[in-house]
Image 1 (cartoon, each protein chain N blue to C red):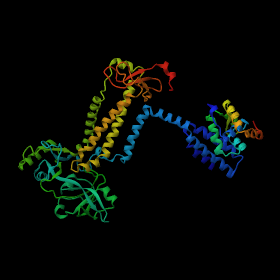
Image 2 (image 1 turned 180 degrees about the vertical axis):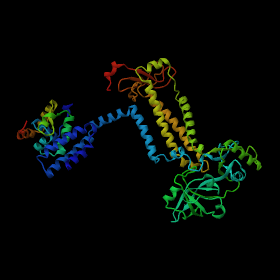
Image 3 (image 1 turned 90 degrees about the horizontal axis):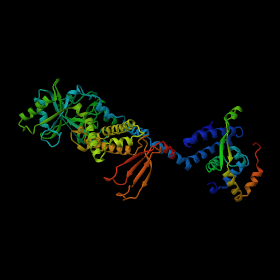
Image 4 (image 1 turned 45 degrees about the vertical axis):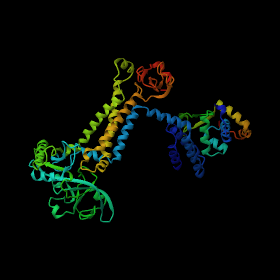
Length: 479
Length: 105
């Protein structure tokens, strides 16, 4: 039993292409040997299988054959698509199964979330979305008839000291008393901050679910946040998030007049954003603010959360245009098409190209959503992390990279079997541009054709040429 | 290619043993007294250098006797030549051949 185990385990070291034969020989030998040897002698014999397997492992010719076989596999179109799919799987696993993407796709965890909107300054302001003065939020809360109320929020990085005396730097949000009553989130334990807390319980704070669990904090825990004492009165629901999941502590803040804050409003039923926007602007202008300074834009929070998809589509479109112009991609003419597509399957080629791009762009989208939110918030430090500044840049740059690589890869593939071309050979002399052709030729391992890539691009020469080879050439090629 | 193969004494010994009619791993182990961890890798090297070739016994013949099929080794032409050269280098190999003849063929 032990001897068979040794042989089976050792066989794992043997390259797959000879493993079956190797195991068959050792199993047979062991059968014969066990009729003649017993105990220690039999053990010594089976131990030789390890040395034999190690020899196979380090045998150069087998390794070369293995490397060649691996290289052949990596040249295939299926391998290309499988690798990109594996990359997507890696993003999914590394992110913990797409928590942020799920946050974006599923409805926000508030009561009637479709009526919650954020307000930002617009119009003459340089930034397309900017914080609003804290005094405006008070005005809207008092005077707006089309909204049920307005609340302000702001966040910053602060030092939190927990009951054990351990200090941690956390992202802490300060909100006005009406913030949670407007949002209407669920609570896991205790209670939410209430409008009356500004007077009755200014030290009250509620904690994010994950943060409370990670730090073993409960309702009643006493903390010190940026030097001020805080008492935990509630733990938010596991699904709750607002703008960022990184915000650990929510407490009441006193916003000085003139300080920039983020603002949310809850629209009354059947009120559209345009009419609410007009009303909020009128309220501000009635307080004596110049009309061009008091322009605001109101966006439904659910739409803003999903705006990341819009910025992705925009970035992809921009990247496509830039890449096509930059690489001077030309649509082949009918004659060129006939020559190039001889024997090929253009539909399959198009499907492969489209599939490759779709998979790569999916990986970019998921990575952008999952891995750039926290750095965005840390970097901008404002209240408008949802504009996703980092992910927009990532989408743009990565999409350009995707298209550039994808087109380059497509050009270096066989027009018939879509395998990567290999065996590059330099032809001609460098610099013989005027009277001769110089460049690199690559062939399909199955003998479907040759790709000619010129050393330098000139108006005299074609950028790249594909020469199809008929079946009479097949004998010269390995495939 | 095979003329250039430089045989170690152990490889030459195993080649000589195969030449003498010991045609599978354990048989060669018994004849030479070498351990399995030396004999089998040496057989692989010799086969890779085309000095010996292996052949599986017919499955039906082995099954008829209720035993597993065995892999047999045999010298090639290149192996014969290499052994002749090795014998000149290691004269004692001939004595081994004379001393240990297998009972079976």
